[in-house]
Length: 319
Image (cartoon, rainbow, N blue to C red):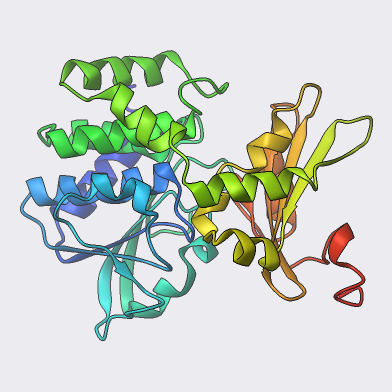
C-alpha cells in the first residue's frame, strides 16, 4: 500500500493530529455502535498522545455504548451547548456535513476539520479527509490511523475498535465482514477484548421498553413489490404507550429487512406530528445510501421529513 492514496490520507490525518491540539470530536446525530466506537476510540487515541479534546454530539449517546467512555464525558449539545468555539475538529462516521447536526454552531470561523469516515457517499467535506469506502466501519480506519501514529493499543481503545466493528457488521454476519475485519478482531481478542460480553451488551440485550415497542411495530409490518420491500412504523403514541426512547428503535428496521426475499427494509419513525424520519436497510442488491442521499439523507440511515405512512394519514390530514 506504500504510496497509495489511502496511505497518503493516513499520513495527512496523522500530521493534522500531531501538529494541532484542543480538538472537538463529533460524530453523527443518533449515534450507533460505530459512531460511539470511533468517537471514544479517537478520544482514547488523543489521550495516549497527550492531546486535549472535547467530545460533543447533538443529542445523547445511547447508554448501552457508554461502557466505551470509561471516565470520559461527552456533552449533549441539545442540553448543554458550549459557550466557546473550537478551531480544530475531528468528525467521525459522518457521511456528510449535515450529519454533524447543530454541533457545527460551535465551530470557529477559521476552523479546520479532519473527516474520518467509511461511507461511499462521503463528499470530502473536511480540510483533511480520511475516507475509505472499502472499510467495514469507521473504527477500521481508526485502527489504521492508530497504527500509522504508533499509538499504543490500550484496553479502552481495543474495546472501542472491536465494538464498532462488531455492530457495523451485524456481529460479523453482513457482507462487509472482510478478511481484514476478522484479522483485526482476532488481534484485539488476542489483546484480551471480551468479545462475547461486548456482543451480549451491544447486540443481544433488549430493554423491556424495546421489546414492547417491537411488539407494537410488528403489527404494522407491510410488504410491496412482490414482497421485496417491507416496512414498519413507530408513532409518537407507540413511544408514549411503551415508555420507549428513540434509542429503543435501534435495530427495528432489521426486522423488516430480515424477512426472506426482502431486498429493502424501511422503518418510519414519527418525530413530530406530521414529520417522519425514515431509515433504510438493504439486503445487498439495492444501494440505499444513494437512495437516501437523493432525499437529503446519508449513510445507512436516511432521515427525512416525509408524508406519514398509512395508519397516520387520516389523523394528519395527509400532511
